[in-house]
Length: 477
Ligand code: SF4
Ligand code: SF4
Image (cartoon, rainbow, N blue to C red; front, side, top):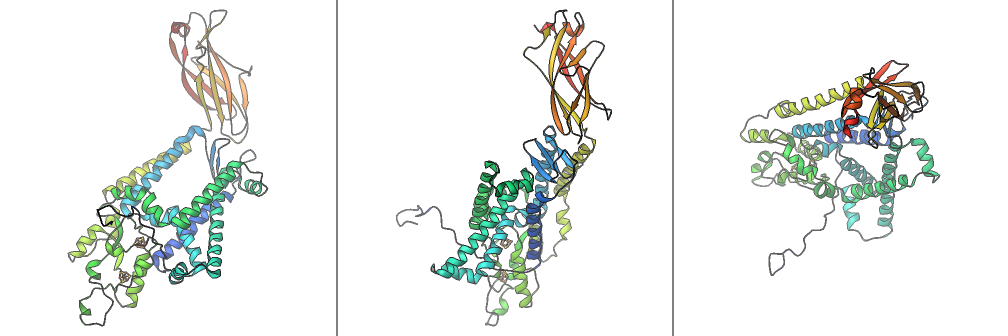
């Protein structure tokens, strides 16, 4: 504070660097496995091949923007089926609600890309510069050859990870082997290079240098999650009623009055967010469980029961303080709120699976041409025109025919297809102009508008699809 008033001298304090110490234990092992699985999926998925036949891409997961398709193993999503993507996003949202209300910030601690990549960068840093004490010493050391060499090695490895991360992303949008070759021979599209550059820089800056600041200051999710958590949500807590009063000197006079916490700071030193969980639950805590591993190790060494720091629900904390036993984890996980989220999540999932299995492999959309709305032919007939977009989702070319009902009044003609039959190439969309004519004096010719149905028939498969539209007559004039 300035000496003259209450205005702070600086609005922002400088970041205190954090040097998390290596720790081993149950939660660290889980995190190593999840890190390997998440990174493995991300980097390797575009390289998995999937045979879809001669006319379709053989990449298992591909977002084909040029042809407006999304391929996921045996599933192919077309633009008019965007509801599948919307459904998956809804499921992802409900899944996050479910996991947050049951297990707190489990997403942040174990699955979030920011957490996973930061973990990878810290692992690299520790590998090059050593564990916490060595890194603190290096940080405080003057710049010399040794420090410069270590820093340059670390930054080079970080850059390599970042380039690989940005590079892997673009492989989801084109055939990976072809794009890799094009990238190296400088034949790839500039968008590919600029995307890699942007993602390389964001990965390097967010994962390497900003780390915990992204979670604390940039990410909105910690604020939103607080609204989804209640007293039954499992989160990280410190059993202060068991640990306090904390103190190091176990053999000193009065030590028998001390709690189990020996104030060794092991839990603080391993924390990737640089916080002290003994101060209570905090927005910065991503519930990664590393402080549990560190403290359990200490408790084992001093012959005290594990779990001074533990995953626990607030309601159990209250019970334990009163001397009662905590309830089982399942009573916290299975409650009305989580069952409701699970039911909603399952309903959307079942709906999507059913929609996937009953969807037709042919489809059309019909757009009436409004300029002009109708044409009066020389014999007095009224003619309406439509643009019909025919989609052949099969892997081979198919013959199609378009017809109209009621067919006792309307006559239909497909431009460029005298016989009424036309061929659509495999996995393609064909735009056709269709004319529907109502003879003079008929109701549709005289009325303002009459409903009609256009039918699309896949001749080989005897499969049909239809779309309802309207026919505009003379009364519209
Ligand atoms: S306090 Fe514990 S659980 Fe929270 S971020 Fe730090 S190490 Fe992870
Ligand atoms: S690791 Fe356990 S004993 Fe050590 S300071 Fe943290 S809570 Fe106390």
